[in-house]
Image (cartoon, rainbow, N blue to C red):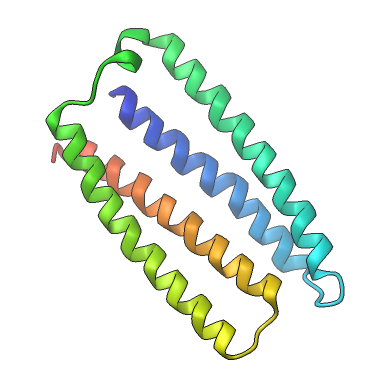
Length: 139
């Protein structure tokens, strides 16, 4: 498994785990009266946890194979990254359109912010999933 595939797995697991827990906790305890402080507190905790997890796992992966971590991306890896970015941009665009629809319906601002965050996380999950699938299929 290449270092870039390991990085995609790290991203997939970190985004899925940390933000999955964030959205479940937010969903279970959402109350419009306390939505703002709850959302901010949970988001700060999720971001700190995400950065710690990704940093630690990436350092471990780099220490296990330092030559692969420092190697430049080859043409295949660059193409995989570009195709994954394209798929992620479609996902993010759909989420932004949903957020705009929510704004037009005058939904709560923090709810819209979380819809945008969901869009960003979904786009990153699509990107990492696309990369993993492409590396596995040999594309």
